Structures are given as C-alpha cells and as structure tokens.
Length: 126
Image (cartoon, rainbow, N blue to C red; front, side, top):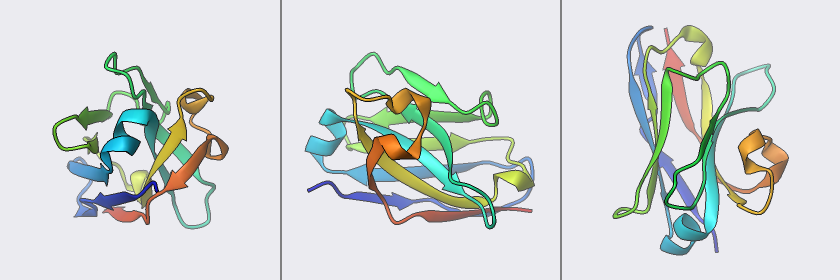
C-alpha cells in the first residue's frame, strides 16, 4: 500500500522560504518516482517538480518554479522534500506529494501519470 504524508505547509511573506516534506514507506520511496503538484483556487492542477527513484537523482521542474524550488530526497528517512525559496503570492496553493511508476512519463509533470497522492498541505504567500 502506498501512503504519502505531507507536512511543512504554512503562511509566509513574499520572498520567504518554506520546506515541504513527504514521508513514504521504504518500498514506495525506493520503487516509485515522486513529485510535487499544486492546485490554487480556481486554477488547474499543476506539476511543480519530480525526481527519479534512482540514485542519479534525475529531476524535472516546472518553468514557473525553476531556480526557486528544489526537490530532493533523504534516503535515510524515506522522505521527499520541496525547498521553496523566493516565494511569490502566485505560489499560494495546496501542495500534494505524489508517486508514479518510473517506467512512465513522470518527468513531464502530468498528474495523470501519478497514481498515488497525499492529502495535501496548504501554502499561503502574502
């Protein structure tokens, strides 16, 4: 069973930083590619960043966050992270952790390629 539990959301002023975490089972962490998505009120679901399950750490970022957000993994803790810097009001959204088969097109950041989702955590930038 794939379970993903996000934490770390909150409120921050523009220009600030937040670190999101996503805890997963060891099997999930080692066998799935994982990513972050977000959805703001009235807007479509948007892929933010994703990372391969392999040790080479291949990553993919949305153009809107590239250079400001960093996706990473802590193998000792089976935890996925999203470090968000230089936050903007338009980054306000519910952020979701997700897992996908690495044999698919996970790097295209399409929600349809991710079959497992966390419950989401709110990020508000003012």
